[in-house]
Image 1 (tube, rainbow, N blue to C red):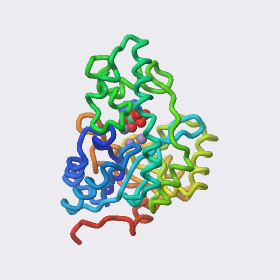
Image 2: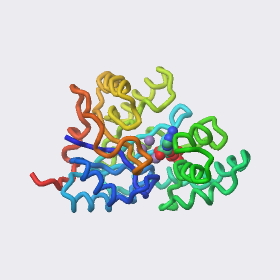
Image 3: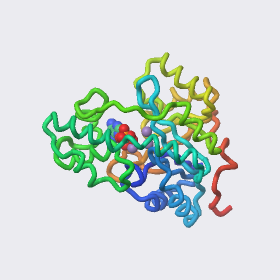
Amino acid sequence: MNADLHCHSTISDGTLSPEDLARRAHAQGVSLWALTDHDEIGGQHQALNAARALGMDYLSGTEISVTFAGTTVHIVGLGFDIDDVALAEGLEATRGGRELRARHMADALLQVGIPNAFEGALKYVSNPHLISRAHLARYLVEIGKARDLPDVFKRYLAEGKPGYVPHQWASLGNAVKWITQAGGAAVIAHPARYRFNPTEEYALFSEFKAHGGIGVEVVTGSHTVAEYSIYADMAREFDLYASRGSDFHGPGESRIDLGTLPDLPSGLRPIWDALDHRVHRFAAT
Ligand code: AMP
Ligand code: MN
Ligand code: MN
Ligand code: MN
């Protein structure tokens, strides 16, 4: 099964529309797809309709920004009811602080001699409710401050760098609750990306489970091959379903294209087994 359950459209910080992403996923052989925009479900009906038109199975998706132990953690939600009101309100509250945060990041960048970063970033924003560090980063590449997005983060936007501004996102408990009460499954996104010590990581996994979370991304564009094994072991240790997703943001920007990741390591329970009843089935059988 070629499942790709993590990617971003212009509704958040990707560069393709939900429809273009659907076409690309389908062309890459994806048979089960989910669009998971940051703190947004505004593209879900478009994604669902595009998947239907292409005959590709679809799971609803989002990626919620969470603050846990002072660090930003991402929780992917899959298979929820797209029209759930509490989820929509929770996401709206979560993304609400993004504009002011971006203005503060632009102020911080001004201190290191980079003016107009907020206005510059806006040129790359399609959804005015969702300005992300990726939009600022595209502008910094445009004006020659770094060679590509990873380079911008390393120099300016990662934690501890001059343009970084701390931010309070949703709580872990709320994020998991919004997803699960809307009928979906909560999944820890790209766990290797967090700079946790083993104690903090154990706390994340056990609290996530205690709140009702059931999955973890094992094979993701954000992990190395060695990390696939590490988090396969974590999935087994914590008895979690495993997920797979490219985290594709756009052509020329993402290392891993839609649908091109290796299969999940054997012996893991795929998250789509837990979401069988939530899949919108459009593929010819
Ligand atoms: P935000 O949600 O505004 O904090 O922005 C986070 C987004 O920035 C991620 O979802 C990626 O799209 C992007 N990002 C974070 N770190 C990096 C990196 N090292 N290289 C490229 N993009 C990154
Ligand atoms: Mn992103
Ligand atoms: Mn993420
Ligand atoms: Mn993502």
